[in-house]
Length: 190
Image 1: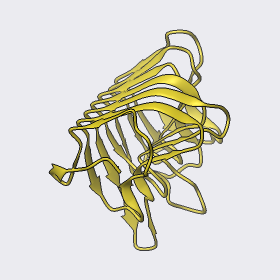
Image 2 (image 1 turned 60 degrees about the horizontal axis):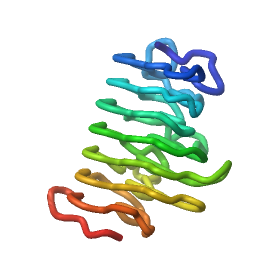
Image 3 (image 1 turned 30 degrees about the vertical axis):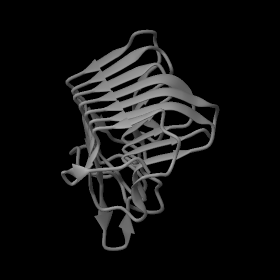
Image 4 (image 1 turned 90 degrees about the vertical axis):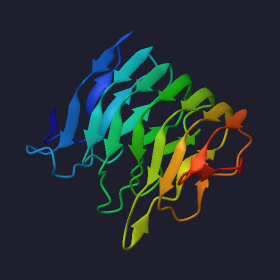
């Protein structure tokens, strides 16, 4: 799927139980031209994103609850023109699972949980590679950013890697933190 002439999101999962499986989503007609659109938006409907490859968009994913993201790859996001690009951004919702993905950050974070639109709860982040990325003038802030009314975040068995401006993970009261590493070394709870 190519995001050409799309300004909001390239794919949206809005019906109960939608599944997006083994799909590549890239910007522009060639798939490698950066776009300001979000790659995939999941709107709190019990959706699944499986083996999805998202690249050359602003945010890779926008997840608003009740969604499983598994075996997916989010990378090469838009650093251009003031975009606040995250591998995955959540501004509200609950019951979100990230399992066995590789997610790169854009100009912000690989995974960013910030309760701008409502509370966020029950988030599982397990067995992922979270990679901060950068350009000479812009780097991911964290590999995992958490702000606002967020609760029940379990972070287990993840590899944190890459470059970031501040720290691998934002200091936060994670409900569970275990088995995480930074470049192969044990990573203590921030």
